Image (cartoon, rainbow, N blue to C red; front, side, top):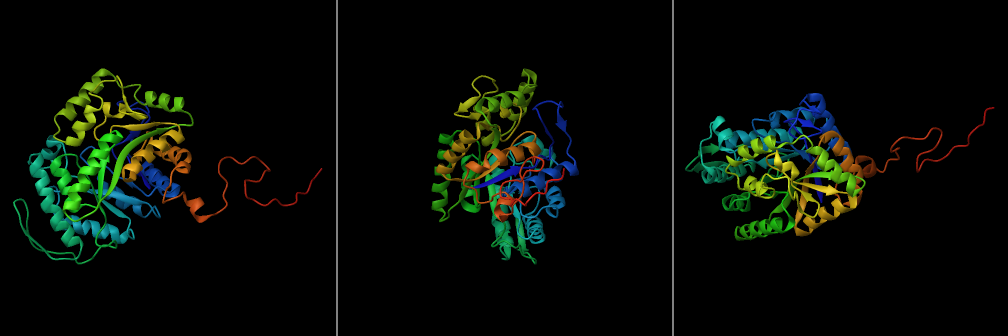
Length: 385
């Protein structure tokens, strides 16, 4: 099991849908989050993409030299960048980070935003373009010479002179719930991502993608994107969930849902169906809460509860075949620590916090004056009167 965190390049805060308690995106704050992720033992972090976000590649490039081991899950956008240029960007980052790059393939689900970036294709045609893009990208990134006469791309003698560290290329992650998106995933990617739907729905998607991959002679790994609200007790966790949306009013919900309605993303449609824009019955599955999705696009659900309960829910997803969990919480700096402190001890993680992994004796928490922390040898004291 691997746990990744999230770097909020679109801003952060204590509450949703309000400037109250909000934090601006700054280099200093992003650095704090990245270094917390790195030190606490998360496998890495997802950087979002889109016009509401700072550019993910530039942010990741500024943070890589300030971290030691975390990996950066960064988006490539078929139709907004050519496969050859995207392959060179990936190879360069992978080499200069000593193999710490993960690639998030984002086809996009907002026609208005995509039109602003110059892409004017409908849903299925964007995925057809993604198919051609990944065919070329995988060939070039693997060190092959690529030629393609496609409907959307015409590539002649595409190649990469400086290869990536990871072989055959940095792993490709991809999320898409529509039938055509699942076919693209089965054909090309390494990790298929789902948003945090109830376990039964996730199981259906995994089974569908597995069948499609087997038909291609391939196997995939699976990941999930979730928010987490974990506290020492169940009641504290649900109080924190309610606090997160304390400033969310009907006007904010209506505005957000209107924006989501214009999207042609099947994943967003499935997220919206979990709550239908209503505050009623937001616990859509045991400890799975859809309150975030009232005013936030994309990942809209959170696991809520005490550490043992949240860990049990995560393990339920793991039993379905999920290996990678991309988690987040508001504010992301404090919650990165809270999740590591409360949740990590209850999960079978491949990346443990750095101090435990190195087996170095180090104090945790506040040290009582003149007392030794656990594991430290006591020296004879001299009493001075």
